Image: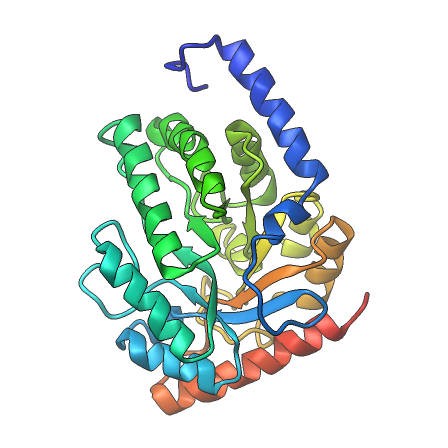
Length: 307
């Protein structure tokens, strides 16, 4: 893979494997980039903006803070790009996002900012990734969340661009992660393959148990899948699932056995870091606020369990 690299394929994979081994030996290195703030035993419990994607950013931040969270993940929102931060965001806009979060007492452990343009070229993908990293710095986001690619023809280029962008992120103290999503990175083993291919110490896994169920049509249990990601996990999208193929579910009300998932992830080395609720049962603003409170209480109770 990455056959366009000036080094031989064998040399590149050998160096990638060595870097990946170093990453697996020290998963806390990723989690150490999590922002300071109130936490339970090192966990940062937060909520993404996604449940408020029919509303503007201010409404989402207000509700997340009012629900008792101290951390917010940036994702979808009502905006031209559909995202809080994207490649089209200006540096001033990214800084303003950070300021609005801080006004409400919220830090930003994670930001999903959309795709990088590797379909044009690897170089364009790297430049796109650097732009998103700069936006994370401006906003004060600790980790850039990548969704992966579902196109086999772009797979090598996509992860090559990430591999080349990760040192730029590391210089700026930004972690980078990929989550279970789509066909080519839908499970723990597929995510491990991508992470080992990139081979950068600040590139890890943002686990998503709801997506493990979703992309397997309910057939792959995330409890079993969690056993395949030891040493990789740097954060988690707290997402539940109801069959058939529904993740618009408040955590604790669906099919995911979160207690068992967390116990297995802890066994594999994920003992601190961000736990960010991604989805809630849909509704209007008052209902969403109520679901957000329930989700926070659920995650707080979850991390209070020691086994």
